[in-house]
Length: 108
Image (cartoon, rainbow, N blue to C red):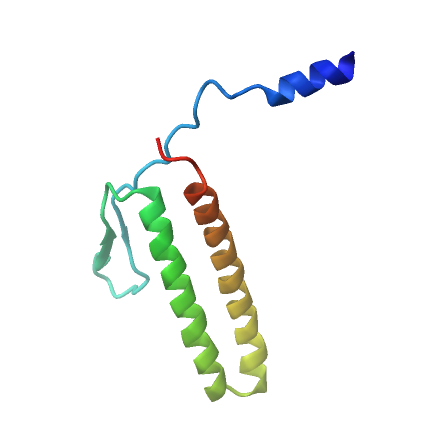
């Protein structure tokens, strides 16, 4: 009896859809520390999906560029830089997984 009720509960359709992901807000950035305001700004109103697509592309570029940089480092530098490349690759994996989840949702 309990198993049947549990199966019925898990088979129920969700009535309230997930809320849409928020758009970006304006945010200035740069790490120049040259005594002037930041040079760059994320524009407001970009969809979360589009922003994540760009993040994935930036992370892929950072990984590819870093991989090329390994050719120019000594052994100590290479081992340290591999840690950075692993962090970039993990971040890219998370972003790609989020995009997979977003893109697998039915279009409403």
